[in-house]
Length: 263
Ligand SMILES: Nc1ncnc2c1ncn2[C@@H]1O[C@H](COP(=O)(O)OP(=O)(O)OP(=O)(O)O)[C@@H](O)[C@H]1O
Ligand SMILES: [Mg+2]
Image 1: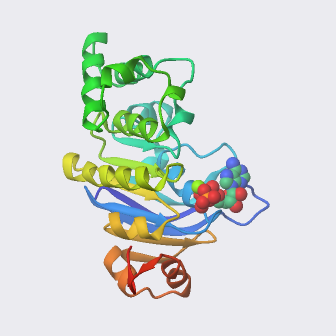
Image 2: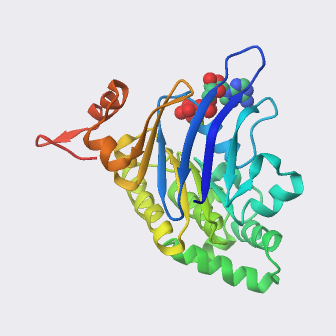
């Protein structure tokens, strides 16, 4: 087992009820889990806790997070630095927010690679170009010279994914990685994301509002409501025979074409 989360409970303030309550799930190598649920139910909070970057006010008050049999809640700052980027990486909703607007993509990509690995500038440059090419970006040399605002949202997202998968992390976390994109680009990126576990054996946790996307890409689905898991299991089972009214309502919102539900 790659990741084992048990009884995870997270609170943002002592005076209020816990935001995430008693969550249990696990992930094997190469598996894709999607987390769905309404806004504010705690999806981002769960993802952030696994990356060890809850906001200061957020505290894990109960539970365990085991990653490759290591207890992440015992990690110190130095442990996190060696884990993040190399073993657990993250893709954001809009990689534009992660990229520095006044530095070229190339400068940032090279720096990122050199922080995590012992590479010369030249080696890092070639590595970055190779990763951009793998993400189906044409003219990678031009992209290296560009600033993030010169790229489309889809291109920026591909740059973000290219950086995140550079070191073949065993776990990739993606918080609504396609929701800032138009529908066509969204579909392309989802297809590219599915290739990552196939190519690198990386497991992924993807947060999405779209249960159609979840059905299409995942092995497992976790449905959250108000900080709790209300349904969790194999994607096929949840799509074909949802047990909870809430899951049924999410599924009924997926458009039907010719009487068939395309999820
Ligand atoms: N830094 C914070 N301080 C206090 N409360 C917070 C903080 N971040 C999130 N919360 C609260 O925790 C709850 C869950 O937030 P979270 O961002 O995890 O939800 P989400 O499911 O990711 O929502 P969305 O779909 O809108 O992204 C919300 O009620 C939110 O207001
Ligand atoms: Mg969120």
